[in-house]
Amino acid sequence: MLSTTQLDQLFAEWKTPSEGRKLIREIREQGPVRELQYRMDGVRTRLVSKKMGRALTAESRTCEFPAIYIRENDPNTSELWPQPYAFDLMVDGPNGGKTRLRHIPDLFVIEDGFIIEEWRELARLVRLSEERPHHFYCDDQGQWHYEPMEKYLEPLGIKYRLRCSDEHPRVFLSNLSFLEEYAYD
Image 1 (tube, rainbow, N blue to C red):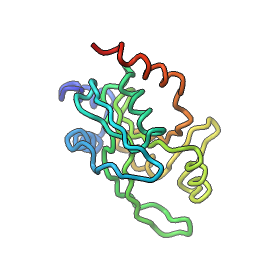
Image 2: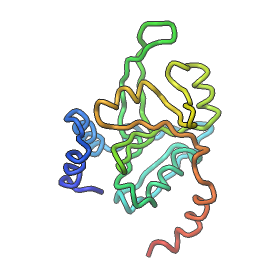
Image 3: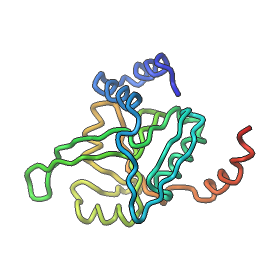
Image 4: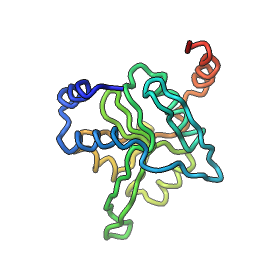
């Protein structure tokens, strides 16, 4: 984990606005904002992180857990925080008006910037883009977007990435898992 001095250096280097700094400090201080939920299609998983010095948990073995596992083994990732924050958003409804949404993303990551990530299965992303095309869409480069969160976080100096589980490199994950017992003393 980064020291306070290292974090302050990143704030200065990346010109993070004061409201973004406040949110990031809150995320790092409070830890996960909710207990993992038991779902019929989910498997709760746990990884003891040497990088973070604590156990990290995920609700999905196919989406969140591989993201955590990859980040744990990525030298460019300084920190990763599952279930980092409960965002309360007012968004445009499909028929006009405003709708209130509560969003708890999967990860907060510090790597080449401050990043909030949400991981979803492709089928769910497609369904969301059909149900709420004014919020969810896939661009020409194949990158998924959740526009309300992107717009909310941008002025705070935090990126939002909506990711698809199909992005996970399955062979790489399998190799990491196989080599894991040899990698740690």
